[in-house]
Length: 504
View: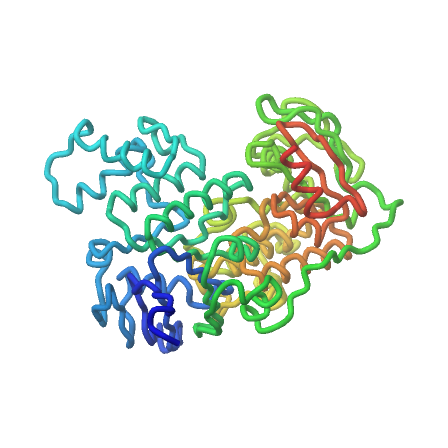
């Protein structure tokens, strides 16, 4: 082939070559290599605990590799620190965005760049034009004077991207950027990613959502157990092959729903439940052993309904019945006493005691049931419950005394589930049960819910993940602008129908 017919590929902005890293003698990365090329989205995929976060930290200078090298513009570094990485144009946008909530959008966009330039005096008037220029350049409409604490998750994401570009980012790493975004917000983000590609920015996109991986990336690297399993053009993959490489096994995402006894008694009934400004006249029944999906766009009222059932924000009007008997739920304790458990959307800040052990978290909500007839706690009963759920839910940790903060997303979710399953609830509410969870753990969690439902527990899954609802729910309720607009059953429960009803 003659040289004039060869397609020239731009040199990588950043390369990681032969990276090895261990913690306490346990390998986290084994001979991992990756290139970030200008104008290309390179997706990094793998189950929780596969080494993705460690690789990001090494590329961004937060961690030092045991061996291997980082090349920036072809120049080798056995190690770079975080400041050197930023000065070289490497920016990481983490899931929490690392923004200052009490500062304005404009201040968040420009302040870190001013600090990096060692400016001693900060003048809002002098730096605001830089923020305005970035917004114009990217075609974004953000209120520069609004405090970040008042922004939606999507606008916080955009603010973080603008900040990266003010810092002259040439390589941007996005860690699970779509976790809390609606479908329309994801589309908006993807349009921005395309504009960044056109500017020649190299992007690494870390995601568990396989359909998004295929839609946004040009190159894909899949990791498993700290090893690089495969790297290649995204066009060489589909969702099934990605799942197989990530887990080492075939993953079945087809609809798996048991037959529900139409005569089964109602475990939960809502009659004209209302909360001013959130939802109105919500009525439905939940049968014993049923898995019921509740979906809707963010802000539709779906989360507020769950929080009213759990006593976080009690309803203003209407009636709640558990096992046919009216119950008054004005607090979380009322809900727990009525037999209702809740796995919240933000499991890290609301569902777990991060500094406590896995064992302490598992029994945190069920200590009352572990008391002896003399009122003292039974050590044997507590130990038995911890052992049962630690092993039964396959929590991946060295032992049950490990701190919860050390766990991956999927394992943290298993601990929250264990905490509420230990209470033997009549009704278990799960808000976004597999958000931020890898494909293998996702299927195991959904199968766990099927097993518990088969035993008689009633389950409500609040989610905008249509495939998740299709694969596990007997019925799906669609909430829009605070009202129950559709009840989908049987053949109506498809991904297309759910998404159509949500956005109609």
